[in-house]
Image (cartoon, rainbow, N blue to C red; front, top):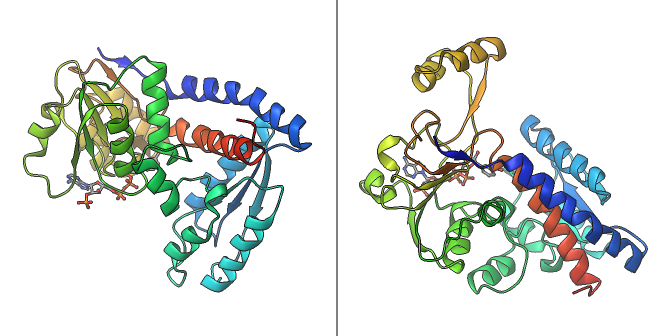
Length: 306
Ligand code: NDP
């Protein structure tokens, strides 16, 4: 059976290591690092994400501010909110929770965040710094995957890596981080022919697709490390049966909870891998930990704490 890479443990380790750095900022500046989260409207999933982010800030002793403009907010009004946070000396990191309502120009909003306060690493300047392998905030989920690999002593150098998915927030930055760690990287997407055989060449396979249990046994090279970024909620019995036909205890769990999470990798078809990230409890917990790490790092840079 493959080794399970424990994201909860890695998250706890990352947060524990951040604590003294938070204290150092506090003694240097007389205040802790500060993160502002802008949440527009009342999308329930976004509310849960934001609540978890604010809770993580509190647990770590960061200053956090939540700004919640109404769903009817205009681009100009939101630019005003971001401008105010850019000027606020108590704020080191700003995050605008996506998706934004249709009438708002998301690109303009992301570009209006000061690159010195870009907690999510989505600003074009941060992306450019990533491409050039210069220091700067990195997109949190792929940065979390790299932390996971590092802490389990899985070195991408000299390995074949395949990343399935090319989104700006996961797939692309993931591929660049693996490239900078000296892997030979193949980026796959919905137009990649014969995806399974491309994936089967990979020593490190990262799935960031958004399709439940999509990566099957024939995608996995024996001994590969399989990183499952996907988070998909299964809410119908038929779908649960399709995935967990061979695992009656999971179907019983589904019947109790009426929904279950599954990744982009089929959870019952990973036996050939040497290590896998489970869903839940794998990559998921790392995203917020890396958001905290980005905020602390931005504060250290502003305070020139080196
Ligand atoms: P996007 O929908 O933005 O991107 C999905 C990517 O997968 C696209 O590049 C798409 O290709 C590719 N894709 C879709 N279908 C196929 C297919 N049949 N074959 C090959 N490639 C395909 O998703 P995200 O990158 O935002 O998220 C990916 C997953 O990661 C989701 O499950 C999401 O919930 C999860 N996620 C988890 C996070 C965490 O904290 N763990 C954080 C962020 C996301 P194309 O470009 O050609 O359309």
